[in-house]
Image (cartoon, rainbow, N blue to C red; front, side, top):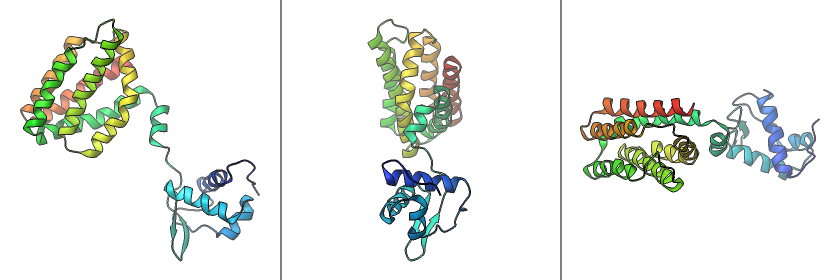
Length: 227
């Protein structure tokens, strides 16, 4: 019998239960033993077992059904989103952006309002206000921030809150890599600007296929540079 030896007890008990679930001791949809059985197995009190179950329920692994018991609803707990983003490399982030922004560009061409189009049109001019190939750190950072604002304006015009939130989650992790890339001179400012201008026109013309392709090409170039 495995005993919990370190504090906090509830966290340790939750991890022990999760380990047993991962090992296949309980199948998906199966009911867990009661607190009176689990408590001595884990070497903790019943209140600690209840807290451990609450933790795993919050992580989507267990579900308590009133009058029926506690059931397994997932065979593992997904990592926290920010933990995943810290662990993966920047290329994985760019690949995820490819999936998000390619579809968002097509949707933006279909759904953008006149006001959103005006915001999108202004963005490339703001990008060129800070040269990407400058030796000035602040200008490089402001260029990256202006570039991010441009891409976000396209996301907003897609009218899909999930895509926008995913983009916002990626932003802090891609920003540093973009700044480093530009400082190393791994960019073609003229080509980069041309792709952005063409993307704006595709959105303006409501050409979803062209907008998606231009967004994809831009991010593929970025991926190749970062790789």
